[in-house]
Length: 246
Image (cartoon, rainbow, N blue to C red; front, side, top):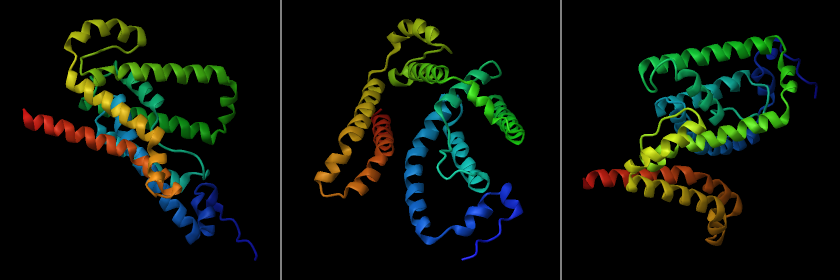
């Protein structure tokens, strides 16, 4: 079979190239992958938006639109595209001096920051500046990601404990924590610890339990991806019931 000539526009729109070779077999695999991505992306998007100081719905917009754009412009079939905890943390740090978190001015500043970041990345891509990444050593990147993880975990203590906790750095959070502990909310703590325990149990034992119940291993691996969704639903139901009792 004579290969089709490469379209000149395919350099800028790769979908014009790989789209010609797309077939029904790939469609089934992509549908399964899209379901798994949606199950994982929705709770992540909500959490990362709150980590950046933005309304949760903004996380959904930021996670859906880039996927559609990358389908048209992306050249990699394996690259993971979506919100990241480190980017959310950097966004919050950059916007904290501009406006109060969650305000209209804060959201507008976040949009400007996203547009500027996208423009800079586009210019760097057109100028073929990707080689600059080679100058970032692996230990430096590992230390940055590890420290970001610690800071993210510490910043979420306020949500886990139900307290007012302010601070942009780990030392500041550690210093403010003792003074905020008297305001600890026991119901919030119980729901938070229960949610963490449920997530751990599903991740550790969920697949084996489903297989024992007769679920095929492949389907069980997909179903345990529902863990975050199930946890959010249960936590929301408990919170709603508690509010009704009041």
